[in-house]
Amino acid sequence: MDKVKRIGILTSGGDSPGMNAAVVSVARCAAQKGLQLMGIKRGYNGLLGLSENPEDDIEFMDLETVLDIMDMRGTYLRTARCLPFLQHEVRVEAAKNLKAQGIEALVVIGGDGSYRGALKLCELGIPCIGIPGTIDNDLSYTEATLGYDTAVNVCVDAVRSIRATSRSHDRPAVVQVMGRNCGDIAMRTAIATGAEMVIVPEMEWDMLELAERLKYLFQKGNTRATLIISEHCWHKMKPFDWRKTIADSGRVIHEDDPMNADRLALVLKILTQTEARATVIGYTQRGAIPTAYDSALAFDAGRLAVDLLTKDENTFQQGHAIGVRDGRVFSMPFAEALDENRKKFFDENLYHLINNL
Ligand code: ADP
Ligand code: F6P
Image (cartoon, rainbow, N blue to C red; front, side, top):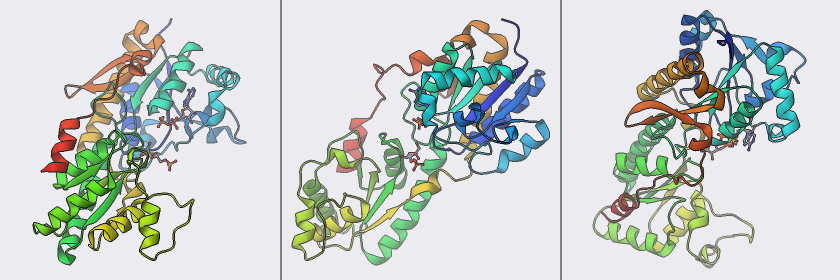
């Protein structure tokens, strides 16, 4: 294959702090090597040629404009979940559109779903390089993903403030963080803030044990204990009739009301006779300005992406995912990075340590 001259870049899945910095890095390194860069809008949607104005799908990214997005939050290219892309015929059209635009290779910034899409584009003759862009840190092949460090810092900041007001009022706090099915944000936040309890989707947990621990801490004089919960931890709750607990306390609860942070705080309040309160940190984790770590990771990843596309033909034709190992960026084939036999490491000892200290 001849050397590539024009590459595309897109952001896909949930946005994550550092995505813009990665685009800037790719743009700078591409310009240095004389490559043209095309920005594809709204994830894989931009490849489908559906917008009335073609510029709403794909735009030429000149270096001057791109440098300006470095300080912008969110993702300049926009992002989206593109369900039609799950269909083979749609991907064939997308590959055709790319070729028609002279785009010979693609940098995809996103999570595992976006990588699956990229792997399929590689099979259609569009080599792709993946940069892990997700706050969840849920990719098993890499130590870090773009945005994870920032999300943790947002949570740590919030929890420190919450613990201050909790102390003022002698009341416990329940704080919900994001992470989808990965408890990394919750665990890291718990360690960094000294939170006394954490529950995550990786581990079963027991409501009565939580309540006992909270009571114990309260009696020992820790009247502002913090419980960090990861958003999808509910399915790991051991059977417990929390609706009955709420109903027995004289409050209204319906059969189909789901468990959530507020209800968990309420159940703990009832079981422990404390004034537990809940906070959901939410999208502030995604819209934050990237930390220095994430900005630097974005730079290193963007640089490696361009290197792979220009130097190593065999590597980029099968598609590679960039990751972090021993603190340094590296890459491996998508198929390997997505291998379901590789389990994401979860530190159970640390989990028990946090919950028992
Ligand atoms: P993330 O990349 O953060 O994991 P999603 O799982 O929502 O986010 O995936 C983002 C997009 O990637 C999807 O909307 C879809 O366009 C594409 N995608 C996901 N899974 C596949 C798949 N198996 N085949 C092709 N495309 C996929
Ligand atoms: O994958 C990033 C993430 O923020 C998850 O932590 C969260 O579960 C999900 O996206 C929320 O997605 P949405 O933007 O669709 O609400």
